[in-house]
Length: 402
Image 1 (tube, rainbow, N blue to C red):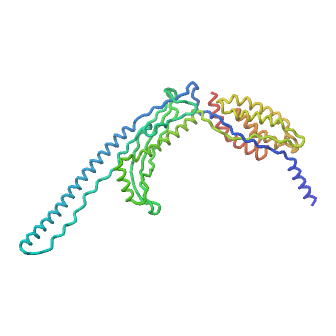
Image 2: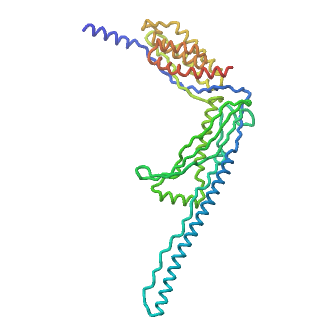
């Protein structure tokens, strides 16, 4: 029993002694630095649109005209065959009427021959309108490439965009959903090549939509609904490929804008962090940690004001000086000390963050390792995420300061 009371005393003693930590959550807006630095005298870009799709359009028109000529020739053969068959049936009917009439004149009364059922006139043929590609400006007049930190102009970074044209390879329909719907799918590709040049040198090249993909042209209940839909398309002369082209262009423009933002741009980003302070505990005073927090909060609020973070660093160094001064009292072996292992780990986490945004990644790494090795779970988790971020931020920073 005495061991139980002894153990309880140790547990509750530590509990009542433990300092209370306040987590102050902060959102940090910042300007992401580029992977490849463009001379800062270059602040504009311009886009050149090439028209290779026009060759594809001419090819499509030629193919469509060939299909029309073939369909028209086949239709004329069907009509001629229909006329011949109808005339043969009608001629035979007229011959039978003539015999019937002659028999009446001879006094032979017989039933009048029944008029035969004639073959139906051949149905008109249906052809999908030619697949004609359109320019980006025709499809989406307000859509264009954006690069954070650059404005559109007539010089600077050169972007070449070449749409090779939409090509529909096949259109097939089949029942789906256990026969409850009829789906018509087109297999297509629409290669768009985008190249980016800086001072004549190729920076980036990517080709979009060059692989064959599927696009649902029609979805209804039966194949007869599909026939009605085709009739409506033919009557309205609707271009059924416009929305697909818009979708493909939208994907390509958004992607290349994102890529260029990451490669050479200065996009605005946001990170969330925490700054730890200790509430007053027994006779211990932690007012200096509150002062450090105020400096840090002011600094983090200014990180996104400029690319080199100069205004933010002025405030962050004040917080760092206070935290490092407090760390001189660290006593990891004594849980009852003012700056014990728990407080030391959390201050290390604060310092790791501050040095990270000061872009002193060596010192940030030093305090990250300190917090992970000596701190509590909160400090460890905080710094593990920070450690994962360092390689990317450090690489971009080293490029920027070259």
